[in-house]
Image (tube, rainbow, N blue to C red; front, side, top):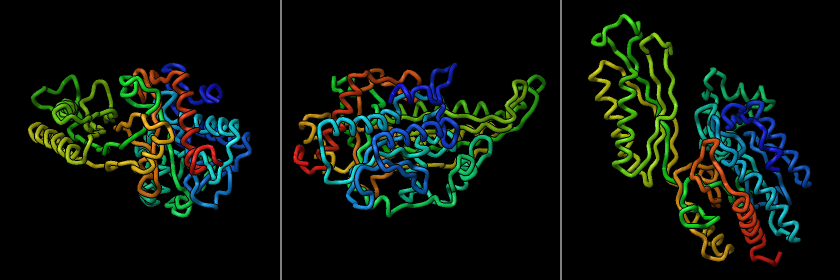
Length: 401
């Protein structure tokens, strides 16, 4: 499975993946998922928001145990973020069938669409729509860098955008959702463990900073006469790093758009996107407020107009303690429990269904990069752990299916 999926959307120059929502690469990933489901005799369906499902047992029975992740990527992302969870889900089912397990609850494997938000700027679109955290009206306002709207992209890919929206009936069938994911950090590498259990997801959000100045000639305009928004933006980037370090949080300007974007032109507009995360809400609020304050002070001093828009936000997610403890019991009681600063579909769904996560060791700690990595032995350990968890949850007591 890994070898079949690996070439899809891989960029020849960077070695990273460009599997953005509702593109050709995304369609190829979806075709792969459907083929793997049908190969195993699972009932395949796509829900109203474009998320893919593969069912073992009656989808209408309720109290289902669901696993899976996503297949899309950030620009030039790594091979493991998302796909490892989907591949491991199919592999775990294969392992359970090898064991002769017979579930008393339905089992489903899912691929949630547009988790990374690389194309339309909002993460976890598929799960947000299903959970009612993104309305149809707001979804219709989403546009990519070329001005193509989300409904236009869905329609071009052969999906009906008129159907999107909250899906409480489907979510009500889920008794537990467990997402396996490569760790995006080095906690497991430092502890020497192959697999961990997530405790919580830090609160996090994305803010757009629009710095507006005055376009002019780069060669003839005196420095004293310039209203250059790039300078204000640059100082804001430095302020973000300083404020995050002071608070023990993280803050990153990782995306920028410049107008008119000419080598010999002073910009009229610099638009930068801030991603910030912290262990608690109060710390995150403090950091973002301080960054905006620094930006406004600099903008006022340099004659730059500034608008700040919060484009997305996810509060802290504490995974359900009872499910987390049951998973730890199933896995022997000594699995490390760790928090994460990365958002996931499991975090979005936690408001509607009991959710939990398993992490697989990442020896480099690198993610959202072609250097993202997990050793094969660790991946196999993750599959076996997921199989144990699915068996334990779906049977009520391991070995008594």
